[in-house]
Length: 396
Image (cartoon, rainbow, N blue to C red):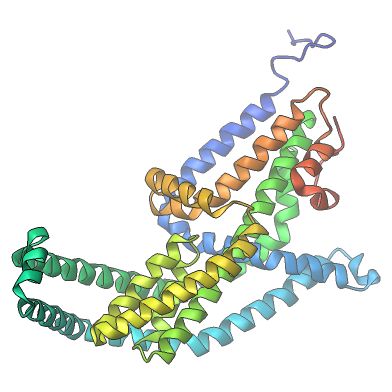
């Protein structure tokens, strides 16, 4: 016997589509989690999609009205932006990748000699320490004796050597991995072209009554992720260029490689810039301690420029989180999820902040419409470009 729904009382099966959708989503999430590193090229592809998708939308709006009305207008915009992006990427790769690989190979080959030179410099400092006046040595040895200094310096050199070799191995593997991603460009084109259909199909699986709220949440997630990715890529590029130029003018070996490493790690807010500076200081120390000090000073200047002018402006336009909160969030993310937590902690925090704000407004009395609540959270400019399959964001 069919279950009848009384007036004002929803059927217990009313939301069976939503339950089914959530079960499928959980199963898909589990499969993706198990896939692990195999999905890294596709994750990179999604990152690129977030970078070029706004340009596709902008170009589509600039097309002539007659062409814009055609069903293939978006495909034309995607092809133009896609080809321009790939052309720029190929030109940059042709200019950067060969010297980058050459400097990587040279650094790997010369690292043992560099560590030997660094060890000699440490031993020279210890000999100078032995020639210090007796009262000064007594004060120092009261805190740390010479044997401990030898042990600490040897252990520090060992750890630094392991870290550098691990980083260089990961970098070499990353470059080879990037060159092997032949399928991602084709996959990325379909992602850009089919996004609207996927979103409409997903919304059709959930009850009509909650589609506006689900669409509002999607808008929040999409806006924060896209702004965060573009912002961090810009910060990483600026930091990498500044460090490469500084190392070049200071006559530090492998300036391009060290700047590339620093720029890559610069995608992690604040912490990445510090981690990226370590190899630069170490390689400079291979040449001389005086040069390492100059590099440290240059890094401090770059950090001040970044902290004062670059990151606050860029991140203020993306996630709108204060630096003090970002540092706390990064510590929590690293503790919970490790390196992945460093990458995801900041955007997830911004997303949760805005979703909680939206839900809080929607639960108020009287409850505002999804459109009004989303505008109050700060997404008013996105309301006019939403995709609501069978639903309207103005629905209460």
